[in-house]
Length: 306
Image 1 (cartoon, rainbow, N blue to C red):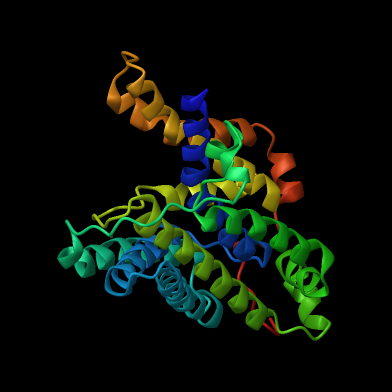
Image 2 (image 1 turned 30 degrees about the vertical axis):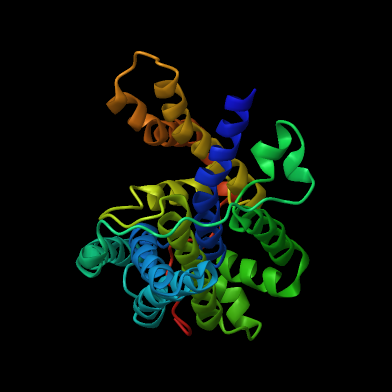
């Protein structure tokens, strides 16, 4: 039972950065902007957060630095695709490649360094409950913040006027523009918010999950987070469930190795990415279901007055 509790706890920790990044990308896509640069944004935010944590010893400042780095990268993307109407797919891929190279260059001096051990966080009283306590209530506060973000984003999108306007921009920007809403400004704000969340996810990886810096630390999680939005059919709660599913698959490889299962370590390392491909293949069997849930103007530029 103790091993299962540890597996559940590890699943929550592993799924948290996927959930936070997935929520950020969902916010972008609900506004009609497809950002393929999540991997690059998370890498730059990871080195920014690690550098901040190493110099200040504060997780809060590290997450702020990561959010700022992610938002700055997203701002560049937004200026290009929204201001200059560049192709969203090509610009996102370029952002991802740039983020990988830039983070490797900046992070050379941080390779091999490690953050000081932190005092484990426990929820009073609840952390002492057998099985449930070690599994659920001895997590970093960001794990609980991620769950709160899901509830907050769901309320914003489906219960607030601002969320209704944002979804309208993603569905029919021409109609929103005709009603007097600043479509480009709304899209740019959504891109900034999504970039900040991707930045927080990147900082979590280097400050809490690792906690260290190596080149390519994100290891494809940005692409998995991007796939999560489609897997979740653009619903915040499903993003969280999908993140924990992929997080559980990631941790399962270590559980199997520790249990002495005779399986190639390379095959076990493939499991998260293999699960992503399988899920996307299953979803793609029903393209009508995707089209019904996908924002109608996703990936399409908007030209006022065109």
